[in-house]
Amino acid sequence: MLAVGANSQKSDRYGKAPISEGGRMVWIPEIGLGIGCEQGIYDGWQREWVYWYGAGKRYLTSQERANLERQARLEAEALLQKYRDRFGDISE
Image (cartoon, rainbow, N blue to C red):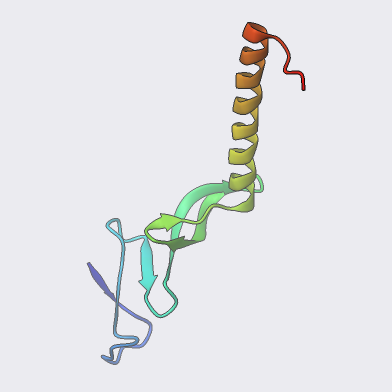
């Protein structure tokens, strides 16, 4: 799918830019990134936000990254506790 860019003149640089399947992201080949919008929650605000994309995936916000890291840490701690319950504490 193609969309006309900001410059209405036909040119290789500004004439057309590919957009994603749902029409919500425009790929900018000159910088190797896309920019688009999605519904989301950021800092307690639920609304449509503008996000950057790379290689077809949206870059996570700092809050989203922190939440994923926290979840991974909690899962690792739970796994470690299961190990300790089964085999005892690890001693050096």
